[in-house]
Length: 113
Length: 114
Image (spheres, chains in turn green, blue):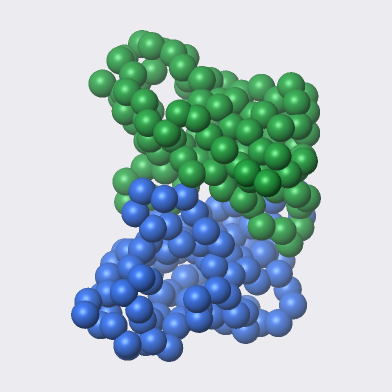
């Protein structure tokens, strides 16, 4: 199993551009999550999904959109990138709720200038 | 609502000395608690988790943590620090029900000197 994979690893965007951060997991997990990590801060939840076709907002959803058309993929879309979206983005997946560990991808480092 | 407070932003120790990273939590329900480690420019790795079984939890690389409900604490310890332990550590709380969304502390940077 590759686990949770994210692409790209790094990206520089200009203000106002758009992009999609890709996240794929091969563990057949129903639950998937997107977090952002800012310097000196813990991770904050952007969006999450409890299964294909079902998504919901987390703590910091503004400026982002998600979709979940398959169990494996959970892309995060940035429309009209802003400097405040400069961050490291982590995708995670979970087998089922309760006492189980979330598995994290390696992250995407995004800079908006 | 749930929240996590990591009491130290930085902890410095010498190699071979004990490590203590402090974490207090707040949760309206029975929480699950985790410690994750992040090495520079890497993803997050689970060190250990508390899931309402034994209050003393042993994790990887010699780390352990004790859940103290009366003190709402979940401090991380290791008897003897190694240079490879230098990293950022996150205390995390999750509700045992619902969608298992995680709430992270701000992190504690552990510095280990020779």
